[in-house]
Length: 322
Image (cartoon, rainbow, N blue to C red):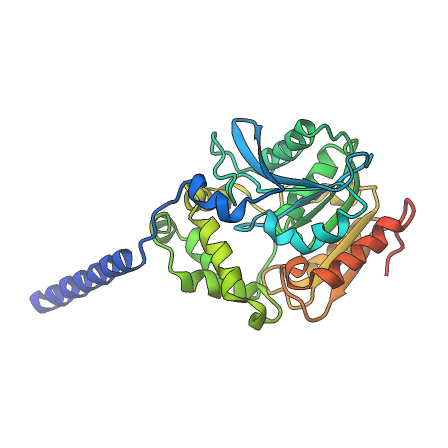
């Protein structure tokens, strides 16, 4: 009995010692926006006051566009994921993208609200701040969830919908990025507010790419830096607690607007079967599947994916389903 107790104490002390070592070795303090903005917010970036936050955004293209395009990124991402799309679309369309609350240089919500309704409110508040009444909205993953929820809740504001490996339905993943698994684990999620091994960021990016070899050191730098923006790591834990898939999903079949659905067949986080479900339930929608791409196809192959978007935007009021 006594020997077993000693072994248990020894194991516990060893685990604590290992945890202390990890905390010391991989401790990365939060960094203020001012420290990160020079590198990640050059022109045309701007910071616009919205709902008590300074929203980091880029607003490019012709200002006389009557129906601008708004691009919404996914969890742990930023407006930079749309760089390839924005470069093409802004040649002839006003193109707006911003860091959603809890991510990028915008940072945490002042009221700590990361529900889907709050994200929709922020989307409309940004549009209002920029004088945009009606818009096309495209979203990847969490951003797709916000996009279709906005179309459900405010159909008068959304002209067209583009879903890119969108969240929203309750789903089962074939594989979840390590950073997401850690953030969803109570004790480890709390520890992540001070600790962030670069290897975790790299592994998580490789997990969401169809071709992991495309994940470059520069790309890892961006995600690593923006994750350490003051408050973002705590906000990530809160976002997973508050924004659950399934809310409003029963209203998806009621959507009646031109909708393009893009999906990477190698998406292991939200498999392509959920893209097929969106296509079945949104009448008149069109699904385009990219066989070699993963969960962030707009970033992994911006040329091929934005070409599908431009074709969609040139069509009339309805879109034929494949």
